[in-house]
Structure formats: structure tokens, C-alpha cells
Image (tube, rainbow, N blue to C red; front, side, top):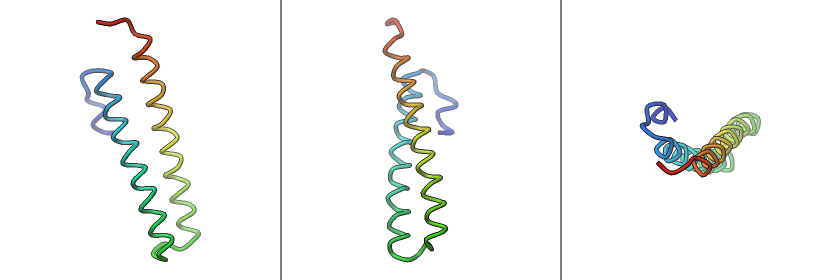
Length: 76
């Protein structure tokens, strides 16, 4: 996400947000594995997973909004 702050175009921004979303999905996977393997207690896991899911929703909405704006924009 930090890289997306310095992009040169909306397409580049969308690309960076897509990468951030994919990385967050992977993080969610690993957090579930840590919980299931007992490395995270249930209370901590629930809290961290909820935070991760909120980030996924935010990144997903950013992607949708950016994609919509790009499609609505006349070709350059």
C-alpha cells in the first residue's frame, strides 16, 4: 500500500492495490494456520483475524472503486 502512494498512474495504483490484497489474503491464511497449530491463542487469533478481514474489505473496495473509475475514464 505504501508503494501505491507514489505511483504514476491509476493503472499502476490498481496494480499495487491488487498486490496488497493478495498479500493480505496470504497473511489471513498464515494467521489461520498459526491459530490452528496453537501458536496463537483463540482470543488473540480472533482479534488479529478480524483486523486482517477488515483490511481485506478495505483493499477490496479500493480495488473496485479504482477499477470503476478507470473504466469510466475516456481513453487517453
